[in-house]
Length: 317
Image 1 (cartoon, rainbow, N blue to C red):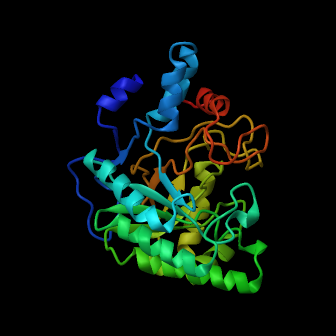
Image 2: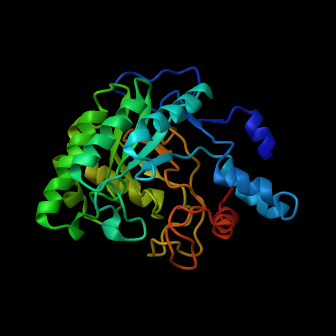
């Protein structure tokens, strides 16, 4: 499929039967489509490569043709995040798809690492969450809440940990005031915290009022490994369902997390997981965007064509 055809095709990919309907309180992805952005960095890169490097363009198109989440954080100021979210929601809904948004603005984000940043204070974070929620509106939306925020809490003082848990509870409770907003609290991955530790943190962050939790965001662990871990966590938090980021886990992890070599695209996004506890496999991290200035990469979040081509070349499709 060419990039032009992708754009003409209204930019949707199936995540279930289009005639089905999702029952209130059930799997929010059932019967929904996920959005394929015809103007994504991958789509633009494929178009730019087409004339001079057609084989690389074909590889990058494997990324461009799949639905991926939209991230919102401190690059979206509180003064404008409501409008930014609302505009994106409308674009996706006009394409007949359901938005998948990522909230990434927690104070002291990434412990000051490659993706450091976030809101400057608890008060500013609460304000930002209110504006973000207003932008989401009443449409059906899935929200992945604060990747790594719970798993990375060991870097914080006890006072800071208490504050973070309180902010996550506030975010869950604010977002879920809209009954069609399905919130997935991020729970790291199987190689970070034990299932018992993560379950305790999820409970204290109010997973009870969320749809469930997310795993493997921006990481590389094999789907089977994360599914087993997810079931262990789920059992300890009342049977909550979860989603797994499969964007770059086609060959599993080599033990590194920042632009590791030799990795591959994973399972395409779908709600057909054949597992009653797994709501969906999603591409939450956008493949081809750098993890940070490590292993030769550009700053976190920037497009990196060479890495994207490698991920696609090693994929099993």
